[in-house]
Amino acid sequence: MGDFLDKDILLEMKNIHKSFPGVYALNAVDFKLRAGEVHALIGENGAGKSTLIKVLGGIYPADQGEIFINGKKVEIKGVKSAQDNGISIIHQELVLVPHMTVAENIFLGREPGRGKFVDQSKMHDDAQELLDAHGMKIHARTLVGKLTIAQQQMVEIVKAISYRSKILVMDEPTSSLSEKEVRFLFKTMRALAEKGVGIIYISHKMSELEEVCNRVTVMRDGLRNSCFRVKPPMSL
Ligand SMILES: Nc1ncnc2c1ncn2[C@@H]1O[C@H](COP(=O)(O)OP(=O)(O)O)[C@@H](O)[C@H]1O
Ligand SMILES: [Mg+2]
Image (cartoon, rainbow, N blue to C red; front, top):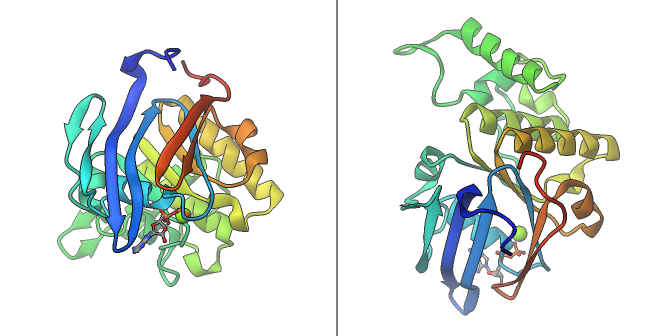
């Protein structure tokens, strides 16, 4: 493209190959994400979008290819390793635990406290602070099962933010949201991008792209077809 400096490249996936029995899901895919941009990844069903993201998130190992974060080569060996590299993925299927509170879900596996004793009040206060700071009108003590899908998605976003992720991926997040919820999600995405987070936004709704995205990559049959700019990132 030549219209951004290399230093802004947060993530580079190079020559990624992945096949499943009988299917060449990714065939030499290159993908670059800049800090502060919302980058749409679009393409028909079966194009390879989710597979590319699963390689990034440590769910599938690539057959071949390299991944660089801030110019440094990284080995993503699994989900935890992706998280340690600042990558958070919000999958299409929600994975929160319904019978646990919002705060318990956000801090699952890294609860504050000593040994077996979780500091419940600190955990809920910290979670509430995070929710409030992002303008989310959700109570930290509510059971996740009582939230709407949109609210659950917001909790996933707050959880991703709490890991201080630099790379946030959303796989078709708006498919079950109302118009108003979509507005709020987009506002949250823009605010994160302004803070320098790079967001990969998977969608097949063309109408959304111009509104929220800086750049679009189109995938087709496991190949990256084209990449074009919609508008410059706000923070650069
Ligand atoms: N776990 C899997 N096992 C076998 N084939 C798969 C698997 N995951 C994806 N595929 C195949 O890889 C191709 C790309 O799929 P996917 O990445 O899910 O596309 P998209 O997200 O763009 O719809 C498709 O042909 C799909 O059937
Ligand atoms: Mg998919």
